[in-house]
Length: 626
Image 1 (cartoon, one colour):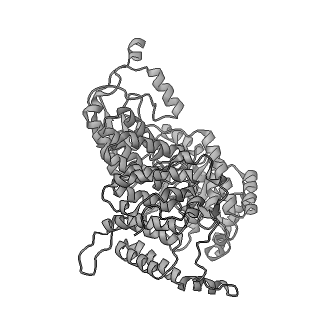
Image 2 (tube, rainbow, N blue to C red):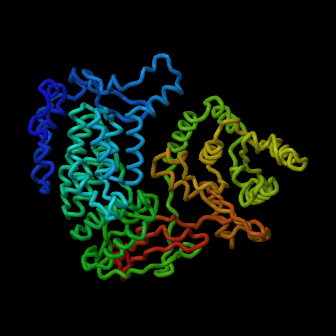
Image 3 (tube, one colour):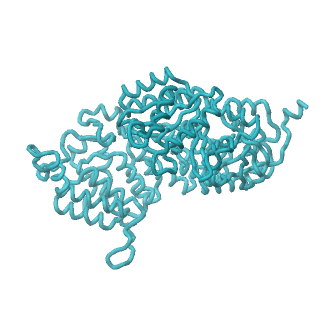
């Protein structure tokens, strides 16, 4: 067994990273007491007085295939030349086959299968065999092994039919494999550090996991959200508020945005520790980043409002003008002035009616404004992404066309609308929507219909009556045909944002295209700009337009953009407008809270909300003003 400084002096001098790892003793890693070896993972940052890129022996290389930044050791290749096939005169197909059938390729496939099954025992057997047979392991091999070792789930069964404790086996061997990876001078990456961090937390040492994340930044490897998970959840589990908040702050410095699991863990930690200001802060972060919570987070929030600490916190008299200023500054739906009121909270699970009124406290929720500058930035980012993903000249041509023919009151995703509940594309259904939107438009202008070229040149488009419809739309300057090979999603989304118009589509915008946008702005934009269409009654008008006041309010929605989706029944068509309020955590002017869940969709099933209010008490400002 390797002990002490097993790395050669020349290798130690090659990399400060290896200098650190050479201090780790394998027997110590196997000890059950994590704190025995945790101290050996100190990185001694004072020794790195210059950036790692300044060290001549090392270089950073960007792997364009994986998109991961790795530390490459230039003095020695990690490829086993004896096992590499001679590919000088081979075709690409033959090269791929040779790599796949090589010992390294076969091992890679088998380890990938172990990863899918979570089979630690078999993965370790393959590793031992590979070491015995002199097979060179690559970064991928090691990362899969570390991942499997760090997973709590093991193989379903062993040869004798009893479940093995593969988790403990993985912990025992995981650090050994990591040390061997460094001995072999295989470049670690983000996945490597994350798996080792998980091993550290499994040993109940989140401090080591956090140290690993901090060193990722030092070595030029940008941490991901998953990199912080082991340390953050580990500290939360131990109830260590200071360290959990430190991890949270480090995430912010690294530009890593937490999601609901991370915020939910921080919220529970803060509730249990009676950190009332932190609870308030995290609720607002949930409002901004998550908007609608899961049932597990819902329970944490409910437990908070039911607690004695929540009843005791809050100001009895507050300045109404400051609260209102906060609401205006934030766009509505929150003020950020802290807990208002005092006394026990009345907490209920409830629903919001179609007018935006809470069925529990009768308070009307608000529609939260979107900053126009955010919309402009969103449109600019969308244009840049579209030009990267589409043929630039094609998309620029569309932008020029839109500049000449726009703006439009509404934009229709023609392919989506024409196929809702249809086996074949229905021009009749599409035309029905076009006519309804034209009637609803204040200018009575025809909406923009976006269709792929294949939709207008073949199939149902060849039927005379459908040709006539296409000619009418084209002559009115209301039809744009996207070129072959393009993704028409970019076109109708850009047109909607650019024209600040109504959007008609059943597309939930959950695919990779919209994930690329990667901002919290998009869900807020989608919410304000989404309406649904339901084929339930041709003679019924827009469901939300029951009176003049509501109709005027929905005209505001028109100019702020809406998305209309379609559902089908045998009775006909109906527009299902979005609710006249934002489906997001809201903090009211009087201090009450309304928290939406992901349970229900407000269309087929009412969404569930948490309503937390307490006795209305007049503020100091209002008392003196009266």
